[in-house]
Image (cartoon, rainbow, N blue to C red):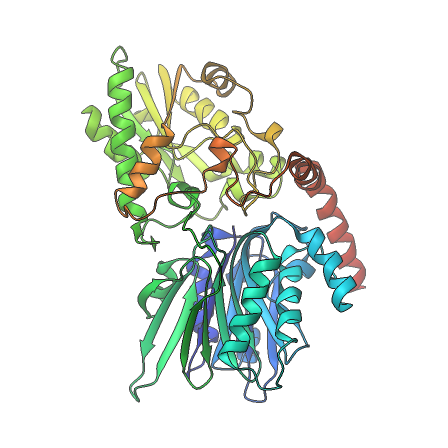
Length: 504
């Protein structure tokens, strides 16, 4: 998924970007980076593998001088886990350009070939973000005059939209000019705009993946960046915006509301918290309608994304809601860990049971979704070990049967527990007595209830329908080969060997 942030103004940005990335840490725990522009028009960059709090020490923060900067937390889907693929990326030409990207391009191989053939530009990593940066750099380089105007920048972004495919929310800085932010024509990945007025009247601007990051750094939420829109803020504080896509159509990723985003965020006019409450209400009604024969003693969420959903389900069923699992907050989110073994080994370190809430009870466990089934299976085992008489399971999302190609780590259908299986078969695999999934119609209406203007969503993991229209079977096979767990393990080993070599 990744989390991105950018800030431009008249005050030092290093601490604000650090704080914003810390709030966005849930979107990526693999690597992080910050780049600023100092008073001498030079990039100051720090990036490494690890968590934000581990990467940026006092010495690094002191070096990240400047009143404009961008930051990134990485969740790897394309490329490898090498530190060389951590963001931000930068190129020296034209002008000096740096960029952070949340999403995933579906034509990165084609872009790399085009860059080499057309512009003699070399992409040094497997990251699609570096390819995106170089495409943008190439089009900026076509400006007729040395001094870029807002029109020159918007023209370059229009050309970039024409070249690239997939999901992308981006923030970039151009030395000597300012900051730009843009979003793909479908608005698949989120991007919000904020502002802050200083005592001297100057307005500082910020961009982030989620509104909660703006809250953390004291910026007022203004609005979402529109699908296909580009915004340019120069170093004098002048603000420009333009629609740069021919046929924009808001189709946000519905998984943002199910799982990824924080509940205190607002994305595309939707309160994530409220959307999850609506999910619980609809799922609770379905359980009451279809499971009338079950004697459910207690509803227990799998912390933390499903807490609000489970609470509403308990209300609909008239059943007690209890916290039966205690979460170790110092273990990362298992879904976004890069390999199956890491995901599996972390579950018991991440959760522990309160046995009294399970002993001799028929428990209904509630989770936001079931992806690979690794976590679900072990959580069910823990419930039975704690003395549960019967274990039922409800998922706030429908069955995930198809790969995601827009920035979520669901690369191959064979790794998805619901692929080519019935609900009864899935139930047996994770070891539950009964299993129920949310209907897709109920899920989409839960989000639309907060913003009826959203007519479509990227729900490809449930339907297999890819809204960009360019995802072929050959592409899915290529992605599955390049990004399955075996490939990730090999990439991680190569990255470790390379970094050890560089240290020597």
